[in-house]
Every structure is written in structure tokens, then in C-alpha cells.
Image 1: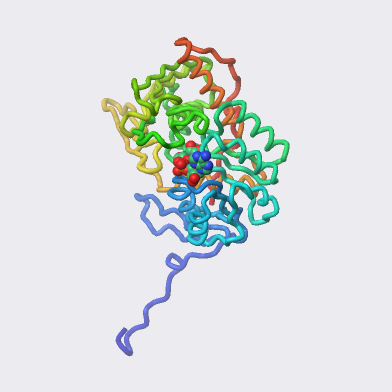
Image 2: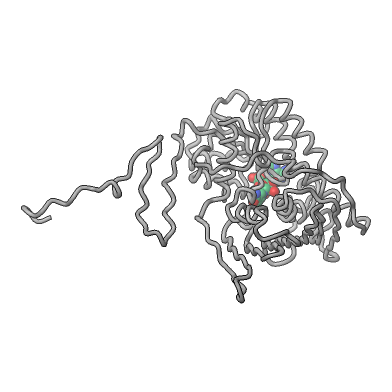
Length: 403
Ligand code: NAD
């Protein structure tokens, strides 16, 4: 500024914002025609956040979960459990986790004496979920478990019983039920504004590489494409309707002579019939190019959600009549990390003593249904299931805006 020139004016209240109820807020600086900018996040101070121990430092933990903690407001990583000391040391240093909070699988039970850890998050191959969820419950820790919950419904029930007995919470990490576009789809369908949902079409396919990975072992994976990725189609159809299917039908297809599919299946096409009449048609495969889409066909319109089951890139279109025109709208929601949202949800449930939206029972029910789907494929006939009355019978309260 030139010497002797006019002093710059101070900030107005619009510029400065204010502190209210422990949060910084700014007045809306945009015009009426535009969306207001979202408020600044109000993260809890680190020492008030819920401490998570991550069990298994594989791809999901390192590529998605640990980075997502940077966007969490209520949770923080405080311990690691790994069979690889070299990897664990490096990752602990990257995330500021002290050496004393790094455990190996044999020494895992010592976590009971670690007050930093409130939640144990099991991110191991599916066949190891039961053992580590049970050990975490025995250590008196709340538990979050990756999907699929286990290898079968018997294991999943054991896990629920162990957590109930220990008086700890159990949440299955069904990230799509916390993802904003999936939630918007569920809310629009359930509002009834678009009439009844006739069809749900869900696809989750990808192409798998070499055969020497745990996903091709029945003992470690429980099954093939169905429990790994087809589960998203199944769980989302249930979450949209809130109902439980009364009839299911499935066909399994395996490429001849491919040694990867000796123990687990490559492709499954399946149908679910819900009591209100909604039909879900689902497709999953380890041998078809990546495609993770969801469509709901309702009486008065349709909702298309591209990349519904992907980590990012959701694109939503909604169609309905507008006089003489067919109107197709694109819906854009604020960008949010679905992994951070689900982890913060568990942290809120622990802090406020609430049941998670996707507790153990939600995982048990998916295993019961997958077993019915395998039976249908084996017998080449539809399988009927006992009608369940009421909605969301396996779920806790709706997630709140985790602020
Ligand atoms: P991964 O193979 O990348 O990692 C598995 C980890 O477990 C590795 O660090 C490995 O060393 C360890 N491990 C311990 N014992 C093992 C054994 N006997 N065999 C193989 N590995 C062993 O797998 P991932 O993709 O990170 O999957 C882990 C879990 O997360 C699975 O349950 C999977 O279904 C789930 N997952 C969920 C999502 C999601 O979007 N929510 C995405 C990917 C994976």
C-alpha cells in the first residue's frame, strides 16, 4: 500500500463469520439463484475422537480407509494390526501411530489393555472375519467388519451373538448405505412421489486377474462374485425397498476350464421378489468389464445411478413427465467421501450409544439370502422365503448428518 494512502477497510460480518455452538459459521455470500456453500466442517479435536484399530493392511485399508480418516470428523486411527512388521512400521509412521500401538495377529488380544482403541475395524479376507470379530468382542472393543460379514450365515450369527454377549456394537461396513447418491435414491423411492417401484436393476461386474489371490479360495472368500460384489446389488435392493424378498431365483455361469473358478463362481444372474411387488434383477461377474450401475423403474419415472457401487463418480439422472415433454434431470450432490461417512457413523454410534444403521443382523440377512440364491442355482428352481413384516427390520436408525 502506498504510504499515506487510505487504510484497507476491515472485514464485514459477511467476511469474518462467527463462532456459534463450538462451530465456525459464515453467512451465505451467494445469490439466491445458486446453492449456498456448505458450512465448514466441525471436526472434533483429536483427543475427543473415537480411536480405531485397523486389522489387516491390504489394499482397502491402505488405498481407501486410512486416507479417508483425513476427512473424518469423529474418528481417528490409533492402532494397526498386521502380520508384516516391515509394512506395519512404515504405515504407522505415515499416519503418526506409535510403535507400541502396532500389533501382530498372535499378539492381537493385548489390544484389550489399550485404552486408545475403542473400535476394532476388521479388514481381512472374509474367511478370517469371524475369528477377529470374536477376538475383538472378547477384548471388550466395539467392532466394525468389512463386507461380506463372513463366509456364511452360521458364522455371521456367531459374530452377532459374541458382540451381544460382550455388550459391544457391531457394524458391517456397507458403505453404499452411507453414500449420498445411494441415500438420495432410497429417499426418493421411499417418498412415494414417483409412485411404486416396479423394477430395480443392479449390476456389479469387474474383470479379475491372476488366480493366486484369496478371492478364488472358498475357505478365505466364502464364494466368488456373489458375496464379493454381487452383495452390493442384493443389499441395495433391500435397502431401497426396506423389505425382505419372499422369493429368489439365481443362475450361476462359470467359464469352462478356467482353474480360477474351481472353488468359487464367476458370474451370477439373480432375481429377488419383494412383498410389495417390486422385482430386483441383478447381475454380478468376475469376468465382465467394470460396470457398477443401479436403475429403479417406478410408476411415474425412473432413477438411473451410474457408478452406484463404485468408490466415486456417481452420476444420477431422474426422469418424469413434464406436460408434453419427458424431463430428464441430472442431480448433483456435494462431494463426500463415503468411507469417511461410514467410519464417522460408527464413531457417532459409539459416542452417542446408538445402534449402527447396518448392524450385524443386516449382514446375517444377506448371508441367509445368498444361501437361498446358491440353493436356487443348485436346484435350478425358485426358493421361497418366509415373509417378514415391517420395514428395515435388520437396521438401526437412519444415519444423521455427521457434522
Ligand atoms: P487384500 O488382499 O488387499 O488385503 C488383505 C490383507 O489381509 C492383506 O494385508 C493380507 O496380508 C492380510 N491377510 C492376513 N491373512 C491372510 C491370508 N490368510 N490370506 C490372504 N491375506 C491375508 O484384500 P482387500 O481388498 O483389502 O479386502 C479385505 C476385506 O475388505 C475383504 O473382506 C473385502 O471383501 C473387503 N473389501 C471391501 C471393499 C469395500 O468397498 N467396502 C473393497 C475391497 C475389499
